Image (cartoon, rainbow, N blue to C red; front, side):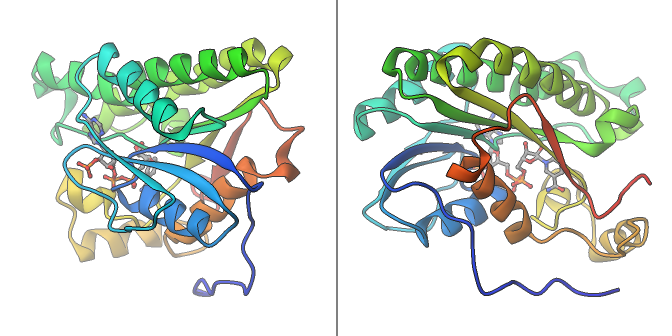
Length: 256
Ligand SMILES: NC(=O)c1ccc[n+]([C@@H]2O[C@H](COP(=O)([O-])OP(=O)(O)OC[C@H]3O[C@@H](n4cnc5c(N)ncnc54)[C@H](OP(=O)(O)O)[C@@H]3O)[C@@H](O)[C@H]2O)c1
């Protein structure tokens, strides 16, 4: 296994961008915000549900809300637009898995919560952000989150999560078609196993479990959060103006 070593450069966004990141308190969200803060001047809406992104950088707008309705999502986008004077990009990294057993035993409330946070809320967030971007006539970027397992039927232990993420792939294509005339580009990340803390948090996985999971990846390691942050930053950058409606895998060859 060849370990990840960070290059001595990072992709950067255009100066002045106003970017709302939901799930900025999570492993991937923290890494993305930290990378954006190394770049040019910008406003970053750092959203968390129960936690806060640790930075006190003056470019940050801290937003806290555990989503439980479409209204919460719309209100969050409006709050950021009011604070930042507009929105140029939305990155949806909020997500989770509420039930770790087999779907045969899953209470219907947990099914609904997983579909809510991983499918319904991303839609309500993206719809509200796209409306602002279309009205502004400056274009925009929307990044949503999928998972590689979802294109292989998911797993019995995270079935609604995978179904929601597969639905997100459809959403990316439909929203991209809708946004294209106004220059609103919509793409998704199809992550494999990234070492973000997600699996320990939602699935109670141990270090030994994670080592065994890494062994299943052809490159024999998890993805590093900074590799994910660099890909997302590139998709927000001026070099990604001809990419829309795509799910970009970051998997180390998982499922080959
Ligand atoms: N890591 C991976 O291997 C992997 C693979 C495939 C896909 N993904 C996806 O990538 C995204 C980011 O994952 P991550 O690894 O950074 O996970 P994470 O560390 O668990 O972060 C999850 C984020 O979602 C927020 N969140 C959870 N429930 C919420 C709710 N009801 N309302 C609002 N926010 C809520 C959390 O807020 P608080 O922390 O403030 O509670 C946190 O910021 C997720 O959508 C995940 O499904 C990850």
